[in-house]
Length: 302
Picture 1: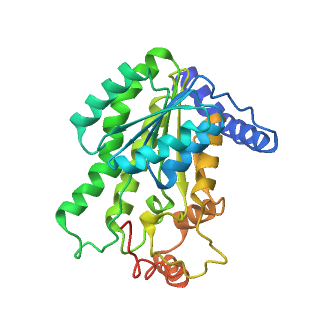
Picture 2 (picture 1 turned 135 degrees about the vertical axis):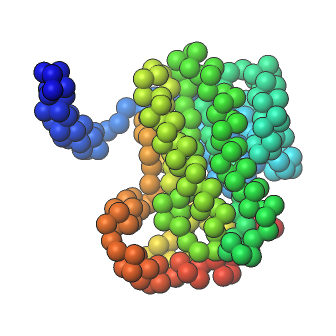
């Protein structure tokens, strides 16, 4: 073993302790927030739910332009009109992120009509809320194509220019279900787990790319029409998140260049417990929390 290799082994734990202490200190100090005044933000699934609130929050925080992508023109148009009232330039385009060619085509249109996208928010998602055996094959594929593959196409469409400019940010609105799945939403949980792996790999891959960052947001059950009918056993202890709260925290994470956001913060404990507890104990937690039956009354978006 040469001297260089030996020194790396010796200093490795020291570096780890240093970065842990550094992160702990930063938690106690006020974070420096960058301005959004020159940013062009594109939000997929921007017509309703969390996407609509994200558009509003980016506009409130001074984004130069907001671009909305989605499949329902009525919702996109209404949200676009709301954003314009903030004095922010807003555009919308019909685009199904599951369609690779459509994504690339519309990305080109956005660059020509609006300019370079500097913040990409992958928010579009669907959930069918059924067990594996009750799920239609086409519905299962649709979830994977929108929730997972759509991120591949949008990121490939806009990331190269961010790297050229050495300025940009990729955001993923994920879910805590990617790390703690529940029965009755196998399509959603699987696609979100894939989406999380995509973002983890992308975040590491961009470590040496100056000016370009990533943020992955993992919220608990959020009170939107997409999860209409889902019931939490103890809503007083685990109240559904408000979409505006998720949006506010997401925009703040972009401004502070925070890589991962768990909402609420107690979800950190859930991930830690899952890493060492036996399966029988985890099953008891699921039974106690009611996750086995929470999708029994699921209706989804009408």
